[in-house]
Image (cartoon, rainbow, N blue to C red; front, side, top):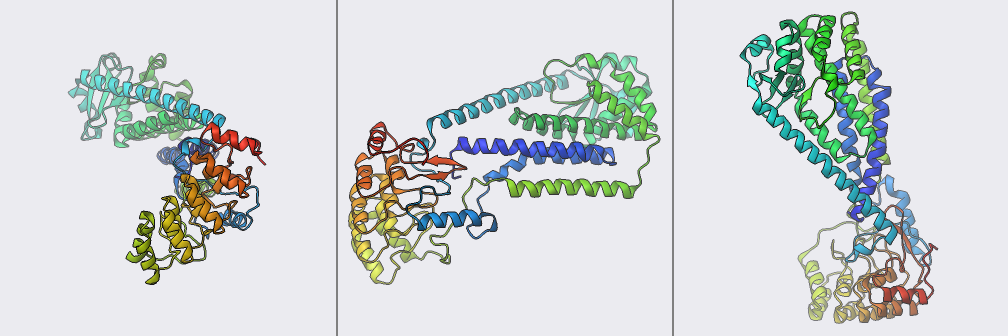
Length: 520
């Protein structure tokens, strides 16, 4: 990733916020108003919820390559900056360096770190609450008593891996246990309901098991714990919960034989549950305690006996909903920025090639300062400016390692002092970044441009300021480096020699030479 993690997290959060807001609007305008079956509506809302949670991860994907249509404008601007050394701003993206902790101005760093800490603390608290719910569900599971008579009441409609049990502490009918699901029925409720009403309620809970709703609900609660701050995801989660209950009501009513009859059983069984709305809920799927949710469930059940929708109409609405979700995916893929960096060639018009053993040895020899081997390999036909991914050219490698002898030999053999490699800078940037003043002096004498802007690697003076070596900074300024030449990087982050300076001594020197804090 090419940005500081706190800024990446902030970008991720912003993308998640508008993605989920758009999906909530789609759910409100399309999914909840469509003439779909309750089952289809439930799963489509689940898909929308999952999409809202994972689609912001698009920001972590690599950026498009320079030839890609989506980054044509950026590549053109970067190329313009490269050919105009006197340009004040280069619209490029920064890359992490050895002093990345100094990549952001102090106020921005404080704000981003505080936001990240708040997110982490909130998520930790929410996950602890979820773990508490898991513990409560486990205790309910252990303390329940098997009820063969209730198993018999469901008969063949009871899922083969599930059981029904009585509980003295359960607040209402619910399903607990991810690995071994158990339908819990309050002992008092089982003693007061008629067999018909009790069976209807058990059919509802059995439907949850058949649909694997407990697993879905667990994943949903984990995601809500991570995104605890997002109101749109919570609103969408409530719609998923209600749609899940309506889908199970529909299944139970179909087995019961009457929507109105099942509604009566539901009203009878839910009496008293509306008072149990406080406290941390166990990890379970249970009957809704919301008055508005209950009202919508009853209305849906009463329509079952009269409403009939042609299969063609349902198919049309299903296609419309799928198209709406596909449109959302297309919009988010196109509009979401990428914080990753795609591999790039040293020169945009140079074809990629595999690195030969001789070319690899040239890079290694330059890094070690083995002048004799450098000369031998180049005289044997190895191109002096051969690029190697992650290393750059031999001259960049020698400059990075401070190998002055190898730098002299490579320059004498024709190495270009201004040739850059994306991600590795150019020779002068590589030397300035490490504070290798003798190498910097030799490269400038050989014609290296002190104001050259390299995409992803900024300028020599910015990198020298990061190195903390005031002598290198002074030399570059004395030889024409613009003390206020900055770049735009990391989704709008302004970087200049002054705000990237590593220590007070370098900052004071830059100010003495005319550096200003304002963007110029």
